[in-house]
Structure formats: C-alpha cells, structure tokens
Length: 93
Image (cartoon, rainbow, N blue to C red; front, side, top):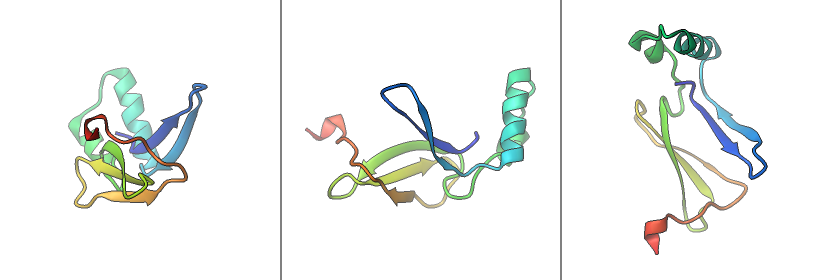
C-alpha cells in the first residue's frame, strides 16, 4: 500500500528504486496496520500516481532491460530502462 519498488541485494541490503507513494498516507497505513485499525478508506488514500497499488514487476524488451510495473488501480503500465538486464521468465524455455 505504500507504492515503493525495492530491490534486495544478495547481501541482504534493501535498495529503494522508486517511491511513488504519498508520504503522509503511507505513514498512516503503516501505523494503522501495526495498530490493527487499518480501513479500506486509509488504503484508498495511500496510492501513488505512476502505478497505484503496485502489484507486479517484470523485465521485457529485446535485452530484458525494460522494467514494467503492474498495478491494481492504474490505467497504464509504467515502465523504465534498467541499468542491468533481468532474467527471462522460467516458462520461456
């Protein structure tokens, strides 16, 4: 619900690649989730603009260097060029 795209390194470090969330709404979601008081209205307010309610990520393009971000509330598919190539999906073999 905070619309952040993160990567985990092999060493266990967390890298924030994209933060498209609303900071105040994201804090509310996290605080209320911890307290057990989160509501649907809180979740609806906590969404970004590029890929609201990010739901998936995949690599595509000729060299697997385009990252596509799927979302549950978006009307388009956000994408960006990656500095490294992704891996092909296992069912492509």
